[in-house]
Amino acid sequence: MAKYRLTATPWGYMGEFSAMASPCELLIETDNKQIADAMMALACTETLRIEQKYSRFIKGNTLWQLNHSHPEAIELDQETTNLLQFAKHCFELSQGKFDITSGPLTALWRFDKQGKIPKESELCQARLSVGFSRLTLNHSQLTMPECMMLDLGGIGKEYAADRVAHLLAHHWGNIAVLVNFGGDIACPIAKRFGEPEWQVGIENPEALDSAAEVVSIRQGGLATSGDTRRFIEINNKRFGHIINPKSGYPIEGAPRSVTVMADNCTTAGMLATMAMLEGDDAENFLAEQQVGFRVFR
View 1 (cartoon, helix red, strand yellow):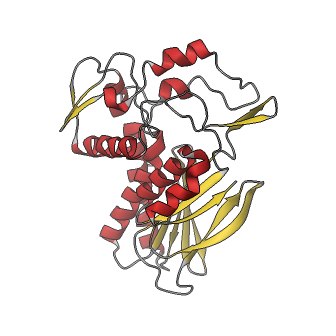
View 2 (cartoon, one colour):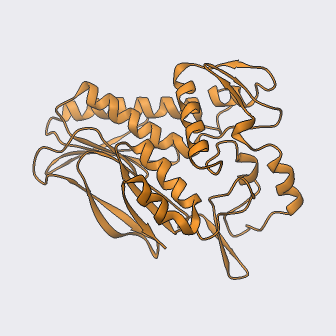
View 3 (tube, one colour):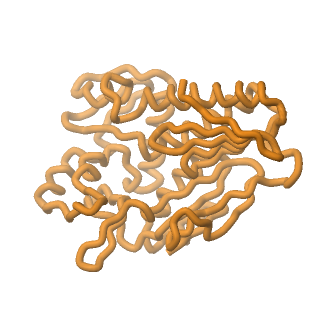
């Protein structure tokens, strides 16, 4: 289990640990330290279980086995089946833009001081190994063509936040908690005491680590997608890290960041990423979804 830090506050306890390359935080509305410790222990255990199972950086785990199964069909457990069915839904709803098979394209881009535009020949070759529709997903069986790779990074952190929130609500149904995994937030139970809602800051794209706006969340999920920390500039043109799998290039006209409030964190994350992928049409897309949102350009 990951080490965590628990700090008493006027409204309860704040717990902190690191996982999935992100700071993870729980705000727990209880003055009972024993309960807060138990909630943190469960949160750490479940988060690390998901990370160990689906991280693309861990050799031999479930995701590694999927990515090394081709061309043989591989049996999926129920959790993995559900995740891949959700990824299929994302792919279809986004008309092919939200694609967990686009790793070969994103691997060609480096968003640091050494970053440069890949060669067109490299992008053409990578596109041959991209396309969720090329997978065969039948009930609990998956078959992948040679050279294709799955990357669940686009949905994994939001899924983990919702899973932890669900388990906490199941075991401590009368205690409000805010689960915050690197800005992806799940609130399974409405806050009961003090301020009626949790206050969440949305990062200012023009001044990182400071809030451009504070939004209130009582129950549900919130997620942010953006390129404020991962981008390159070449010949005075900005290239964000969110790649269009059809072209192999970063999305044109994408906002700096999109924050979505929905029934759960996984849905919020899906819609925030899809809005980024819509580029100039992000606001219209979100308005059609009938969810709360904030867009910064």
